[in-house]
Amino acid sequence: MRLFFKYFFKAAHYIIGPIILLLDALVPPQGMVRAAEAQQQVDANTRNLVLYHFRMCPFSVRVKRAVKRLSLNIESRDALREETSREELLQGGGKIKVPCLRITDEQGNATWMYESSDIIAYLQERYA
Ligand SMILES: N[C@@H](CCC(=O)N[C@@H](CS)C(=O)NCC(=O)O)C(=O)O
Image (cartoon, rainbow, N blue to C red; front, side, top):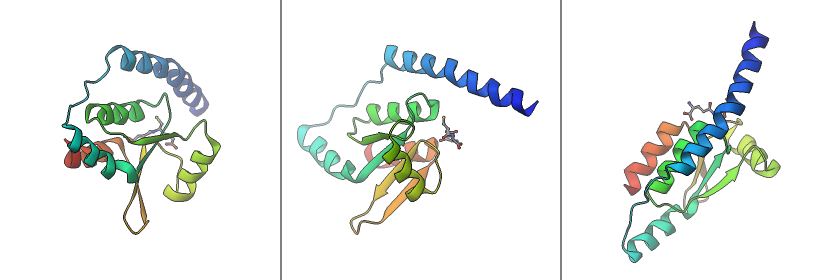
């Protein structure tokens, strides 16, 4: 039975993933518009952020849509396809789970934030 569920969820992932990508492409979020100077300031502030994601992960898509809605330029790294990104996430965050936002402070210390809702709340609080 466990094996059945394992393969059921795997199959569902391959079916649901492309549907989510398609819906995301069909209904793109409207990015907010800022004055050029304000956007430059935001870009400077988000330079210390990196988003680790999987392309077909619904939770990652949710965060990436929030990033677009807030017009943030955040570097994103695919932790499924890119071996080095995967290793960074494992070594830094402690587990391969996405989405994960790496936040580096001015001293160079990194915080690894998991959970899509927490990441979105963090971004909204600062940039909405
Ligand atoms: N509650 C989490 C769920 C994230 C999640 O389940 N991500 C999947 C990919 S869609 C994952 O990383 N799975 C690997 C694992 O859990 O080990 C969130 O909202 O971010």
